[in-house]
Length: 88
Image (cartoon, rainbow, N blue to C red; front, top):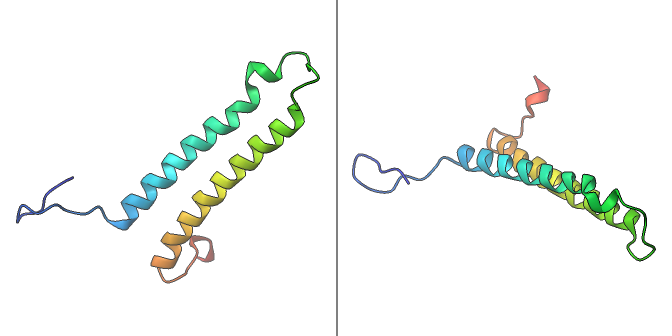
C-alpha cells in the first residue's frame, strides 16, 4: 500500500479497486469456461457421470461470474451519476 506525504497509508481509489476486481473475475471466468474443454469430456460417456449436467453447471458458474463483473461495472455507472457509457 502506498503512503501519502504525511506517511499515512493511502487507500486505492474505488475505480482502481473495482477495475482490479473486474479483471480478476474475468480471468477466473475464462478458467471456468476452459473446464468445458477438459479431457474428461472428450472420452466415451461412461454412463455414470452426467456430462450434460456438468457442462450446464459450468456454464451457469461462468454466467454468474459474468453477472458479478457486470454488477461491478454498475458501481462505476452509479458513481458517475447513473449514466451509462453507452448513452453518449
